Length: 354
Image (cartoon, rainbow, N blue to C red; front, side, top):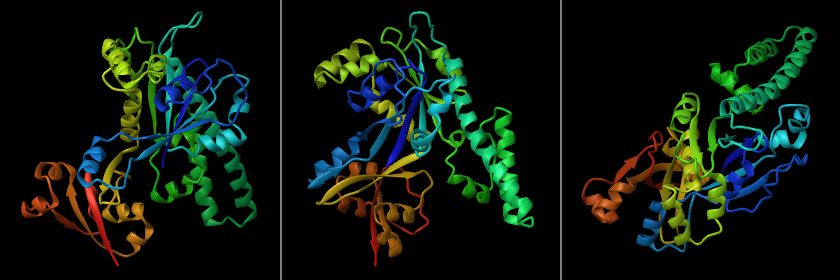
């Protein structure tokens, strides 16, 4: 399951965004509680393709892809830093697939919105956290290397973490470095924050929604960005569907917060969806762009990958155009693929295996 962590400075409206996206009712009070456990919620990824396929096959179950959202306590950049980046909270933050940086785009008494400064503050926090890990690792490896007869593997690791330390010391994120496959494998287990995919959630009020194009253009030079009227959308969750639609039209909000966040999450992580169909279930599965038919088989079940023979495939668009599998085959749009076939978004796949 995809895990998206929502992080932000105090008063950024981070938990409001969480509630708006998940329909939760988490406490949005503005205070630092010292809590380490995040708010958690799992959201189905709305996909009209699943609804259409379920209408054709009338399965016992239709299963949408899901995203787990984690709402972390507001990050402070002063004396509280050591409490935030330690222990249980830090380990959970590092396990997410991507970070959504919630940035305040509205003024509050005594504190005008400063989106660029807030982003810099968050980036600095991530840098400090990763730097502490690298510093400790360099120290440990240096001692091992001096005592262990200059082991070549230890030397390679020491060189790698020294390179990371130097990068972070220059206030540069680790994602600015090109790593070899060997180095990426070593670093993977450390889950460095500055290697995480990130995107910006610009949280604005309803009166200012849609009026921040210049700011969005500037921020999008570095990050993918989505604009959400968090408090307004949280309140929409309390209305029935028709009322919510009416209010969205009034404020020219064309797409719900959950759909916006789903799309930017998929774009940031480079994800696609493929489908399996049948009378038992119609289901959406998630893969990274560039993944193969063998990867798709493993996503469904490891046994399918081990016994893979071929993948029978057609596209959702072709199926919708032809109207049936029989018509697909007669029109030449039903394909047999091997292990190395690159799965495309919207593929409907059946894995043949032994």
